[in-house]
Image 1 (spheres, rainbow, N blue to C red):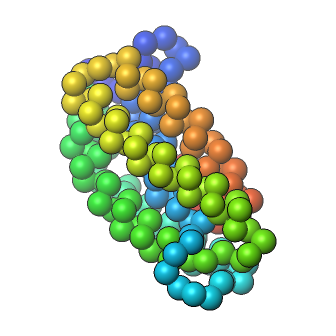
Image 2: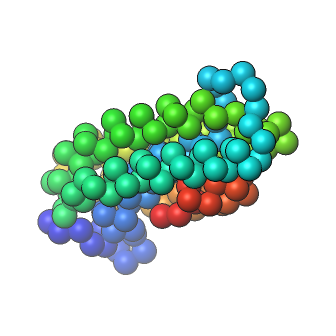
Image 3: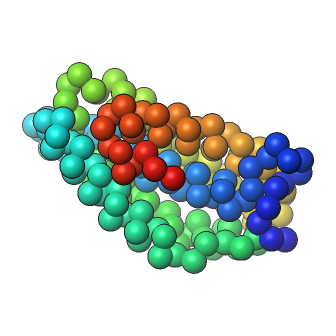
Amino acid sequence: MTSGPIGDTRRVPIRQAVLAILVVLLLAACGGGGGSSSRLSKSEFDAKANDICDTYQKKINDVPQPSGIKDVPGYIDKVLPLLREGTSKLDDLKPPEDLQSKADEWRQILHKQVGQAEALKKAAHKGDVNEVGRIANEADADNKRGNELASQLGAKSCAQD
């Protein structure tokens, strides 16, 4: 099966769904929370988050994208370690105090998207097109909210698909 609409035309294409999940997995983490004990200024946070997002987005883009549902599990296997590594670096960033609640919401999206990527891999491995479509649609909505939050936080590179 090639990538394309799953089920009816209102569903998100497989390739777009995988990318939406993976982008949000990496980029949603820019909210930070652990690691370093001192908070960053707004400009420091923006610069560091954008640098990390740019670096890891390039690494992810270098992985050949799946051409169909049967390729999704292998693609996720290759990309998840990059996402986790990038996320770890982003988790160490501490945003300015006035941005903490937005950053926390963004991190919640990240953790939800990790589960979605794992569920997408399982559904694709089983060839369950309906479940892949359901997960894809949910991930697309989460991706939009994650992009809004990234933009509001000032992590413009992290807000791009």
